[in-house]
Image (cartoon, rainbow, N blue to C red; front, top):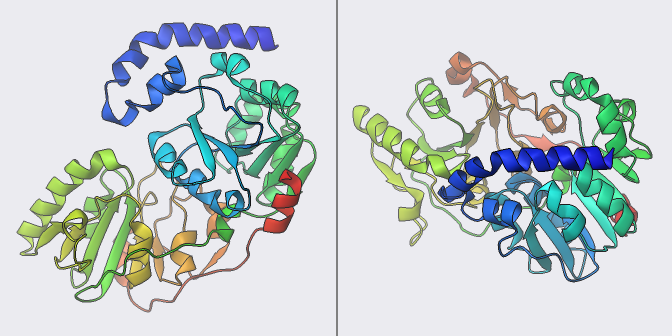
Length: 375
């Protein structure tokens, strides 16, 4: 199996080379592709430590309450936003995870490999099982939408789970699905994103009631803004930084058509005062500070069909009223942990902004048990 898989992965790599070279010139992939697919400035970890792996920004942030309990750890990621977040951990040695054909030569021994959520890379677990003391899948989940697709390749996932010693699942539903896929030694510990503590680093001053439209995707800014009253001071925070310029142009035009002022958050960094009617959050890492002073949050990724929603825990941590669209198939487990979320169609937004209630987190994951399993 491993030889066949390696040859297949090598074949995919070779035919993808021209495309990878092309993408490496794009700003979004300028560091990640050379590091992951050509090992440029991406050497193996040099110390035998607990090794954590997360895909992107959200998963990397979610590891914070666990990572801070260790003096020193290794941490690998897939995306540039994940890398930017990872290097904030002063106790972490950070790398991009190489493509699978490099892993047999790149992975060194470790105390444990702890992989977040659905990063089920066959070669990663196969090699780590043989070089690390134990392998753990943390915060494991299988969404309603994904489960039928996983089941079609059940034979393959069974092979992956043969190399995973312990699976820490988010819920009983996830546990049942994981067992059907061949997982062993599955324990339900809750979603680790419920135990994150958020620190406010800036105290923004607002002019009037503040509405934060967070983690938006293509077309969401327009459909949301056209369906809400403009009496609020509004901050729009696109999910992906590469969309900042595109969203800036739209917000400028929208503000002008409605006789409103516009500015970018990067222009408010000196005095921390939110002055304009509509503000683009073009500064990474500021959403927590904005949630802290907001009066209501509309969470994006849920009013378009192909995203599946985003994490509501950060908003609920500050007990802010939260409104979401109905397309939340990737976040159902987290939504169940938050009380008082309003889930509506976009045409219902105006009505949803009445009679608002604070949200709060109902249950938190078992941090002590997670640390016991890893250590």
